[in-house]
Length: 276
Image 1 (cartoon, rainbow, N blue to C red):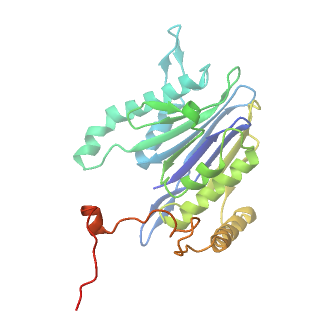
Image 2 (tube, one colour):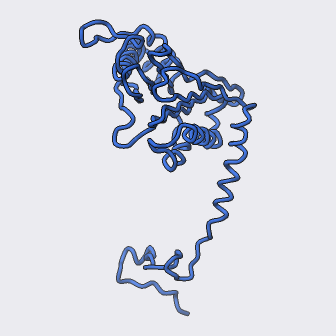
Image 3 (spheres, rainbow, N blue to C red):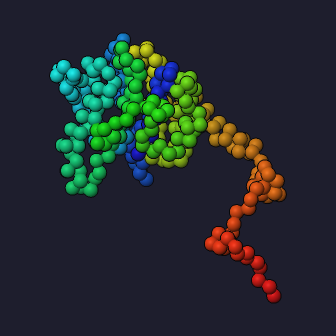
């Protein structure tokens, strides 16, 4: 299992991934889930992966040389593609090629073809774009219908804080902080996600990577988040008044009372305590 999150903001892109691939009782192993493809001044592409490690590794091996037909019939690779849409098509093509080669053999051993990928970045002459590529090789793009981020892997624990904080107008540093808090929430609740982490923060139109960091147990900022986030949540929780049943309109007792189970079955009935 893994957890990866990517955000497409007006100011840039934020990518964060863990590195745990196995978390058994007596063996914990790691493998980096983030791969960066860069031609400074021309393109920055970031790929993150979740699912069966052998499948995602096979996709990555194909990706640098995988081609699709361009509009003029010439072969297009991730290195000469003129749009991020074509890059997403190339990733999808690589996924389908691995599926055609390996899916039947995996099925015979009771293994599903399980992979999901995030590909994002910017190519010179085009705006930043972010895509989520599925196991069938099809994909969707962030920024449609207001969705500005994608998660793959163990996503449920880190989603609520992102939904409450991040919008397309969120500054990069604030979004990076939110991504780390989202990751900490996931680490806290699921042992199959673990350190070290890879984080990349890309500034719009820079066409270069200058904020890429590996985060392990010794990282002071992430240690601060891990120690303070839970306590801050507890402080906010303690500051919220407990529910009251005194019947006032601003308490749980206010308004129309909910029916009991017996009343719900028969709205006209009234259940009284037995006499005698």
